[in-house]
Amino acid sequence: MILKTFRWAFAVTALGLAAGVLYDGWAAFGIVAILAVLEISLSFDNAVVNAGILKKMNAFWQKIFLTVGVLIAVFGMRLVFPVVIVAITAKLNPYDAVQLALTDKDRYQQLVTDAHPAIAAFGGMFLLMIFLDFIFEDRDIQWLRWIERPLAKLGKVDMLAVCIALIVLLITAFTFATHAHQHGGAHADKAQTVLISGIAGLITYMVVGGLSGYFENRLEDEEEREAAERSGGTGSPVKLAGQAAFFMFLYLEVLDASFSFDGVIGAFAITNDIVLMALGLGIGAMYVRSLTVYLVRQGTLDDYVYLEHGAHYAIGALAVILMVTIQYQINEIITGLVGVVLIGWSFWSSVRRNKQLGATKGATETDSVTVP
Image (tube, rainbow, N blue to C red; front, side):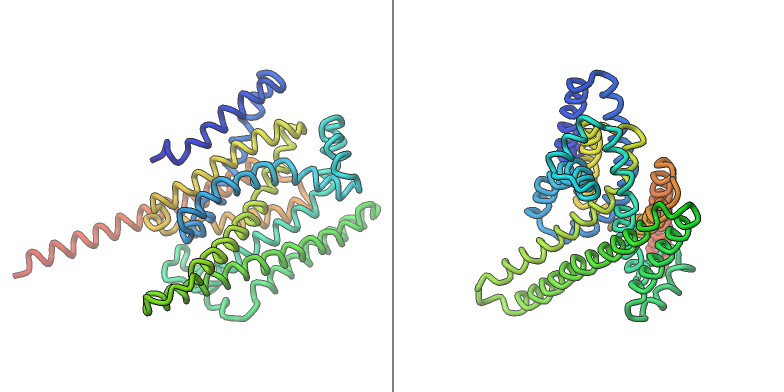
């Protein structure tokens, strides 16, 4: 099962490492390997959240996620996205941006660094909305009840998540503007950039997430009708399933893009070579995709019920970290460890819960046998 699910990831690893050696020798081999590990450690929570969405799709769309989705994730976000950012911020055409990335790597890195506030604001707001919507929802299974129970009650207030996200964005932009003013105002215009980018992230979440939820609900209604009637055959349920899956796929891609921001920015701490960056982060992205499918097919989220909670707390932490990095530098190791610790804690809590349920079930069965 593991070999079958991860075979493409293993193949891409071999090709990517070989390409690194051919491109720039054994030093490049090491850089590509380090970047792959960085991407996996930063994106494990991404895999858990993706699995929660992907399990609602059929086998066909799971394959699309692993093929077309990987092309978007690897080439789109890890290779094209940084070039597009440079092209927009430096007002260059795409060809000149690519030339800059290949010939003047220091200048290219500086331009991407200058664009970081906009990237972090967009990704931070998108991820923050995912966390807030999760934490404000009333759930049958709660992990940290002392936090989740009162927050679920608060979640009954309409648009609370949007209000909190906008308050966070305003505080971030205002803090940035104040800091820039105190240091000569050289970057005062970045406060406006942060505000606009953050609002764009919020709008993107509401549009894509809203469409995904709308078609998912319509699909569920149609399935109920189909089960009740078992007749007709107009083909609309199939088409509707396709629409629902398409928008969920689109939602997954935007989600993956938001997760990849910290990996792309963090990669510059290791190398400013766009080719090595694409190879290393691409390998990592393949493992994240394969891990997502593995979690779905093994039913891991059903067996370890708190994993999804841990992943969403990691998303919340990552959103806060992205917003903080607009002003302050945070080591990528810290970013990765926060996610790993939260998911590890939720996994351990799930194991303990399963043991307790097993012990309770065993005791109940014993009592039912011994009672005359």
